[in-house]
Length: 120
Image 1 (cartoon, one colour):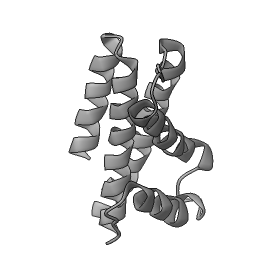
Image 2 (image 1 turned 90 degrees about the vertical axis):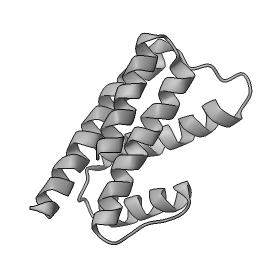
Image 3 (image 1 turned 135 degrees about the vertical axis):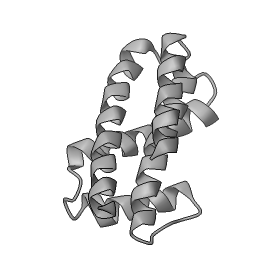
Image 4 (image 1 turned 30 degrees about the vertical axis):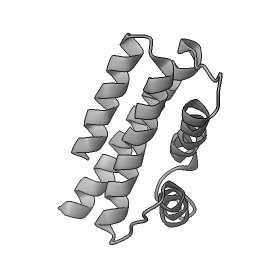
């Protein structure tokens, strides 16, 4: 979870600098690291981002361990990061990205709570 929180802080720094595409990348990775930590806690992992996403949705979202509306940000950021990193002329704007920051924070906090419960 440390890496998730550090990467989330990186996203905040990039947002403050108006670097929206880079911010989206860091937001995605902050959620990815949190989700990966949760999966590892249960002995699950994948070498591919799509595999992590699939395991997360199957093990946590479809079983209602994580609310669908909360999990949606991870799935949305997966798509947005793909666009921002690999499609030319995609330029995210402040109005788009700002709400994603708070949603990513909420997901990471929720996942951290689950990880802590399982550690105790």
